[in-house]
Image (cartoon, one colour):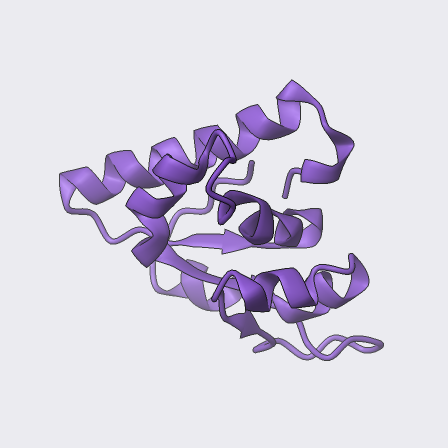
Length: 117
């Protein structure tokens, strides 16, 4: 959920830590997914750029990127960037005033643990 547009080391550190955790679980053979919500829907476009410092790590875990929230991407002007990055827009949870958002309930019901960065 960190915002790449704020340009701080903190926001980059949060997305790097999220991807490092995904990589750690992936390497261990765990079922792990990365989801982008909130202002974090701006990340796929940034991470897909070859010159981005996190691009290499992003490419290592890219198959674990499940999607980005459609409603959040719309709200934060990230829809085209998400599409350009090839990340699915998910709108599985109706929310008034939005085209639907990426819900977390189904992941929790399946036994996934949620970590928010």
